[in-house]
Length: 344
Image 1 (cartoon, rainbow, N blue to C red):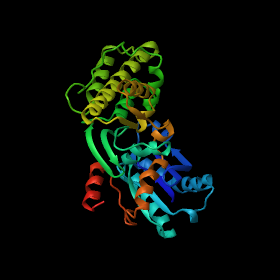
Image 2 (cartoon, rainbow, N blue to C red):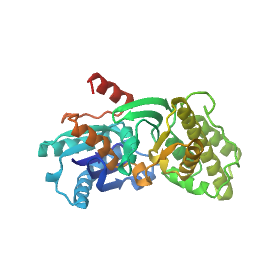
Image 3 (cartoon, rainbow, N blue to C red):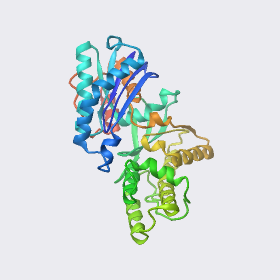
């Protein structure tokens, strides 16, 4: 099946053409980073307006880059949630319009589900596997038994890891988005220079908490206001990043022990972080675990990943219909329950 996939959950307008849920023919992403940078974060209304401006040109570019016309598309997959409701509605409206105009099915896909299945665009991964979804809005651990079959093992109790990166970057005066900037500065810093706390690391659960860590950085800066430049800033970034990575790795290690699963997927925007990638590679080597982390372009928000579950649902007649609505809050476990209730 030749699928046109659309992603507009936050501040990237993306479209892709993917064959059989595996082969990327094109993947186009229009970023809004520069638009939101002056506000230090995503402004939902502005994001929605930018999606309206970009959606048609991005879809047209995806088709052109793939070398196909709209008549060749056999199904449409679109992010239905979770995300910003106004942003989601732009993508859903575009997907429904194309589906109605072409007389083809459209499937609404979960954004986090797409991240967890992104590795399939590069290689097959055997089920079951453990998955860490770590991004600006989510930090969750899942057991993945198949497409449409997910169980939440742990989740953040407050801030997501990516949100903590951006907030700490703002505290020290770094530009938005701050995660990549902190990662770059951390490479020249000493991760042992400041001993920040590792929240919930030893509580026996697979849950996360990053709000206290962020507050700890704020308190340290109040006592050391000069540490916003030079080597001291590098050391602060390295120490903060080490604390986040220790928590993410520690909780993932616990989940691996509890489940006995020997396959691990790390996905989402924070999976681009070099410190986290290196730490997860060391964990996998120590535990003899098969590790799958998509290349950075597939970790960041994109539409190609939406086509993996989208193709699965479309090819099995599980499309959501042309009356799709947005689901700004959509836990993965709900998908599992609904499919099970339908006997699928």
